[in-house]
Each structure stands twice: as C-alpha cells, then as structure tokens.
Length: 401
Image (cartoon, rainbow, N blue to C red; front, side, top):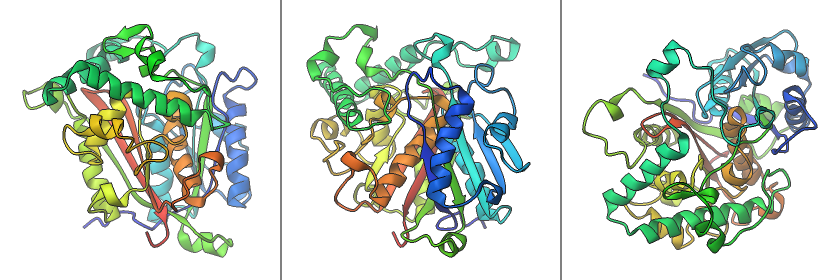
C-alpha cells in the first residue's frame, strides 16, 4: 500500500526572480535569475543535478513545447528535462515531478523550475490560445472573471449572505494582499490601497471589481530537492521537508450531475483531504502556521479557506473580516502579496508559493517574516475554472513538525 512521501524529501535550495513587467529579460534570463539564487542557496554545482522538470503554461508564447530551453539556459549537464503543463497549477506539477523522482530513488538531486513571459503578449489577462478542434470541444469556455463571478454568486446564495458582506470580505482580501505586497521587494504590485478604492473600482464581472482580480506577470521560480540524508551530508541543518504533495483533477462530475452547486472547489477539498492524511495533520486550523493559496480572484481566496478546512462552512467571510488570515492573524494567507500582488506568471506561481513558505520556515522573509516560529506551511495552486480545474496542494515543514 502506498505510504506517501512525507519527510522523504528535503528542499535543498530555492530561488525566485523578481516578478513584474520584465522588459529587461526574456524567459531564459528569468530562469537564470531564479536558478542562480537557488543554486547558491543549495550550495551545489549544476553538474550535481540529476533530473529537472520545467513548467510553462503558455509554451507557444514563451519557450516552446519541450524541456530544451531550460537545459540550454541553465547549462544543465545533458540530464533529463521534462516540460509539464497543468493549467495554472503547472508550477506545483513541476515540483511534484522533482519530489517524486527523489522520493523514489530515481534521482539524488532534482530541479523544478517554472517560468512565464506574458507581458510581451499585450494582454491584461491570460492570452487567448489558438483555437483548434479539440480545444473548442473540451477546453475552457467563457472568461475567467465571468466564471469566478458565478462562483461568488453561488457562494453567496448557498450561505445566505448579504451582498455587501461578501463584497466587504472580498475587499478585505484585496487590501490585505496589497499591504503585504508593499513589503515584498520581488512583488509586481507594491502599492497599498484602502477598502473604498476596492469597492469603488470599475466593475469587471459583478461582483468582481478591478481590485478583485489578479493580473499576469513575467517571472520564474525554482526549487532544488534531495533526500534529508544528502542534505545533511552537504552540511544543511534545520531542514525544510516535504510533508505532503497532492493533486486532484476534475473528472466531469461538476458539470454532469446535480450534486455540485458551483459554490466551492470539489478538487481542492479532495486534494486537501489527501494532503492532510499524508502529512499526518488532524486539525489544520491549529496545525497549519501559514498559507499561500491561489487568489486569482478575491472570491477564490475566501472560498478556498473553507475548502481547506481553515474556516467552517459559511464562516470564511467572517474569519476574513475578523483578520484571521491577515499578516498578523492566526493563519496568515498571502503574506508575500499572493497572485494578486506578488504576481502570476502562470508556470511559476506554484513554485513561488512554496518559495515564500520556505523562506518563512527558514526565518528569511525579511520585513514580512512571521515572528511566532512557523512550523508547517501549506500552498494551494489552482488551475482552470471552478467547474473544470486542477487543484494542487503542497505542505512543507520543519524537521520534526
């Protein structure tokens, strides 16, 4: 019977490029920026890496449909480089490949790197893919803001919320993320805003206003992983270990029956259940120290708090307004600014989330560092639409946690 990968893999080093409108660098340059930081952090040489996984969600715009660009840009030693894509959850998918390679014994040291260069495309949001027969038949239909606006309406109806209460919580989420991003030198958006600015902003898709929506960014992030034994042999102490790593992919149930009301993410609930079991977590509200979740829209963060069992059913709005997930709250969420303000280079976002959790666990997050000694951190990476998506959860923690 499968036993999972808990404590079998250590993060040896991580790196992250500055996110934003990076006219100064192409995708290769962004990968090098993130990889250089990770390599120095890991204290190894490139030739010690046995295998690599590259995540890019929009390959036609970025680096092409293979792992070759990463191998060339990083001057890898003719090792296997696998290019992966799983909607916006691609970064965590790359991390999963590297972690599983080490856990299985197939590699001693493995690399996961994600990159996206989207601002050159000229779109404010995600670029439109070339529409072919298969995409038209089974791909995502409709706009992202429109689909997530429906999520907000369904959540409001399910829990009997007043519109102003829901919008107030969503505004709090956005204000929080901007305040956190202002403290992050690598964040795309570093300007604090107030609640009135959010509530009076132009409407994108009711009830989602301009500041309820994350944009897209250029950026890259990466992780180098190994076994705890090798990490110790390399002189590493206070190891950050992978406690759980789970993906759940929509199987059509959301749209093929009457069991789903559109107010939550079924995949996130499945992935969370499996991840907590793998990590040995029985009460996430008291055991999880901080989270990074896929806040593509402010409503997504609110709903995800319940899907992750960090808020009780129907209580996320109240927990948000009470400050439970603020930087100084009980379980900080998006302490680095999140997708909303750190940015969303699609293929890199999942790894960026793990990067922030890694820094927090190591006490290296600078002005945004939590001072209460975080032990376990969760990242939630979501790709697709509420009715058709990939949910990925990675839980990392200090040795012994």
